[in-house]
View 1 (cartoon, rainbow, N blue to C red):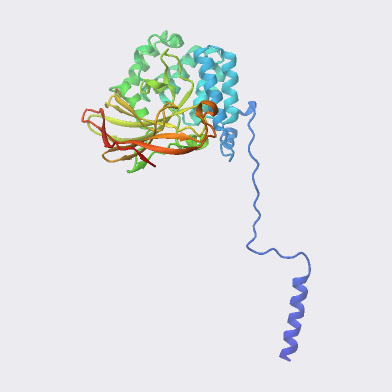
View 2: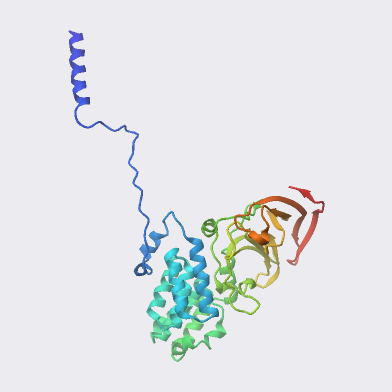
Length: 383
């Protein structure tokens, strides 16, 4: 009887498992690959669409930065507004950034397209543009130009409280003329400065806080892709060019061949602050080393000294590999030999086949914030 029961149950189980579609194994899952978000001209001021676009896996940072620099050159140096508008918008379509939106807003202000300027500044704010005080100040200027005095006054007060430091310029800026004709102007300047003992110091602190503290030892990576560099290090706005003199060339026009990035704040004493920033030459390929510069400032933001500590500034220079440690920066200088003649073939896709160590240095900082090189090894040797 038991045998018949077992046989009966087996037959039922056979029919159940053999009828209908086969059952998928429980470990199988369906993975749907999301299609990349496409950005169009109509989407440039849609915050939701732009933020969604920035989640795309594929990045176009190099092309975006190149277009941005061409836009800055056309706008600031050549004063070709149509070209600047084209380059800025093209840059945003490739890879939106707060800095590009901010410069597009400045361009729209120059063209008296105030509504578009506000849209641009709003997008820059959404993407965390720094210095925030300058963004607020520009909005105040737009509202003044539109004769919206109450809004202009409100944003001017906000900008001063956020660290806008050029107080003398408030009394000269033609964009604020309508606001200055109102009784609100003097009132908001006083309210903005109330509790602010030193607005210039606040502006400096805004700049300084963008540099993260580090854990020693810190190895400086000379080779980063464009996408990796933009993902890991935030670009420095031109509004901070008082602290980074390299942002202007010898003719005092905007330096548009290089992009500057925050990196780190490794040391700080009672007398000085040390900041490290990165400079990437946009005309060089990804195979060319990026440059690290270390600078010392007093606690009011005045430059004391600066020094290249890693990478390569010019093609004929030594390549410096460095490690930041508690007592200074260990720097090794290398002479490099390339597979092909660099004068004929250049440096792109031209691998290094040999490196010779020229010297080894420990870079230290004096009590008053100046750099001193201490030679460790002057004997050349093959690496």
